Amino acid sequence: MLRIRLNTQELDRLKAEAERRELSMSEVIRDYIKRMPKPKKGSDGFLDEVQTPAMVE
Image (cartoon, rainbow, N blue to C red):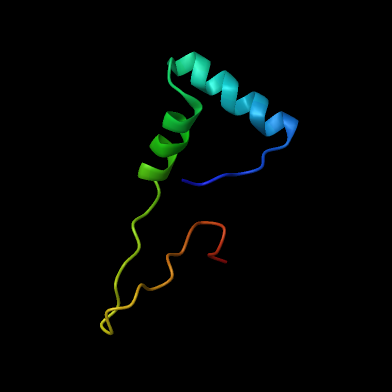
């Protein structure tokens, strides 16, 4: 289980999206995580850092 802190605006946005999609807030978050890039394993067997658009200059 993971507990997160959201400010009022973030919570309102999450609630609205959950209501719009007729899902629980947890399901909305899990669906978002499923769309994230999967980490890649390097030749040493450890996970390499995944570059997201914000990390690329």
